[in-house]
Length: 479
Ligand SMILES: Nc1ncnc2c1ncn2[C@@H]1O[C@H](COS(=O)(=O)NC(=O)[C@@H](N)CS)[C@@H](O)[C@H]1O
Ligand SMILES: [Zn+2]
Image (cartoon, rainbow, N blue to C red; front, side, top):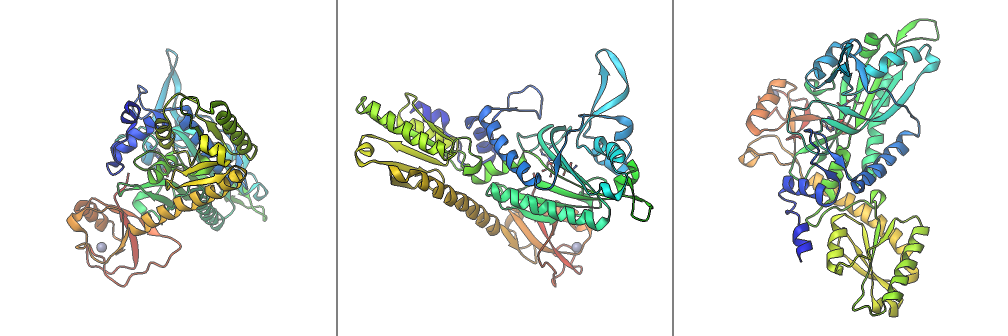
């Protein structure tokens, strides 16, 4: 029993403790690295990252190309775009020495790579024939976050920063690219069985130097939203600063228009948090490092060899169908084995004992619902494939219901009991920033954004100032 006690997680409703504990017990992250905001990927966690980012690459490689730019940005380039600096000057790490000698020019560790990439885009963009450019990179970036750092959620080294940077002939083309980026993000999050909210950030919360920002947010179990992706229309602001011009068909020099869009390892934080339960991770089959765990059930060595042979046959047949399968031959009791692999979120468990040999069948157990089912040996491969499908849709539908049940549309704030917002409010808004400040003041939740791709006009007045409201907005507490 010591195994299970030592492994026991706090209940998920004390989400903060549950989250910290699961990262360690499911062997995702080692949080003991001696620099604040920097963490170590355990091999199991790294395998989840690898599969998750192979999906991002698959989706982007349809019409983007992957590149790699240097980590260090010379101060003169970094300091060029004033609004961008304003937004990042408190967050940038600087390299000032090479060995013992001070550098001529200080070098910034990229917090994001606009000022590394755009001086080179200036060299690459000559004519409209060179456009559009759609490149991305997946790198580590550094932000001296002063708020509470958390593994996968708020890092000082963002180890898995996917940033795409595109260049277009017209403002409209760049706007279309922002929409396409958000569509791609929706596709990506569907593959992680995660529903997201899409909204246009208010002016004061857009990316520094952007015309506007569209963000996707996930609802975390503690009722706060986590920004899990953003796409920015950069207008020609950076093109003017970095002189990215192209010759249009009439021979005129024109400043280009740009977009950029980023996702970090927060996508993994959201997937772990939304799908997990009191027993540990529940991983969508597509990204599970172990998709099926086979547990031999052996009592006092009875039929030991034939049971192990049966396990090996099942493993071989599943692996030939591309299913990542393991047999747990450790000397732990079956119950302790179940516990460990449930903690790691393995989508399906197969138990093979003496009676299964006799019946030529196995016991198959789903991690998401706990359902157990006797399956004939010769139907295992097909059954595993169809159960993966139903696990995927079950995870998505459950998360979607959870999100929808936590969006409260209302016209007044009195309905918010004891003024704590758990989830998302959808309320009318007059458009004034002051009302946002009051909301933050009174209910500790601010404007997340204006819903996009949905009807959201409002006939009711702004619940904060009573003024005329022409739109509805999402309000939530955020990470
Ligand atoms: N400190 C952080 N730790 C983890 N993820 C972060 C952190 N800061 C931002 N992110 C994630 O990174 C995404 C992109 O960051 S961003 O600032 O919004 N956008 C950019 O940097 C653009 N240059 C996109 S290419 C955000 O949507 C957020 O999900
Ligand atoms: Zn108002």
